[in-house]
Length: 285
Image (cartoon, rainbow, N blue to C red; front, side, top):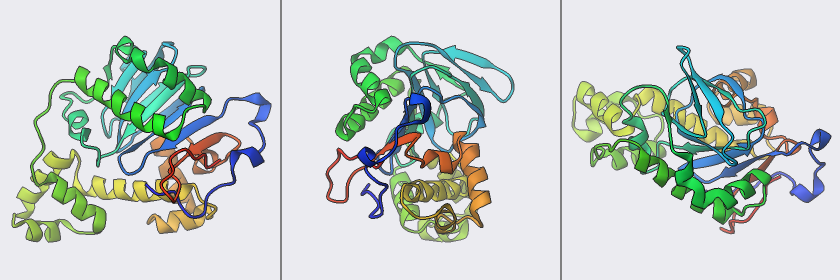
């Protein structure tokens, strides 16, 4: 994904984190996902449209608690899309791999048979240990982050139950909605020559969520693209389709457990994005 033309100031011109805290790092990898790292990623109840792979860089365990009260203690763990949970990971060097609906492996995470979370074998990721540690410290390159994302997702899916391949028309459907995010169910049904009910079933099976949820996700993706610019949060909210900045902030906090103002503040978060000319090793602040 090209970096927005209005980028934050380079890190060299920004103050250090308060009290010498290690800043979070966010590696924005385009329309298929991102990686967020940090030592203080604990959060209250959040729910996301993306699937999430959580990996402890140094094997220190963390806890995820589901809305019903079930708690899982793990060193690596997968959270399927749209599963509400809290995270307890203070002091844990944690990496959060967010796999978007447009990623080719997304259907595998959607096919997890029981809503909840699945603990994984952390030692199976040990070939990535050095670069995972570097990413938490902000010392990894963008190119390394891209490679690690795919390797980590591949290992996670290897440990999950196999899933049926999605409907062959799923990719066409996703591309169509990427280009026309406001298409209604009626319009999609006409374009694909199906009844509304059949279209709704095909969409849910192919994408792993309802059309309404997917359109909400498209707004989220648009928001994430705009967040790391010099535009005001009000402008970002309006351009992403929200009524106002407070609504946008509440929604963002429900997804990520942090406010958008915190997430774009270079004192707390370093953001790595692809530059406009395609050069990958850029730090947006």
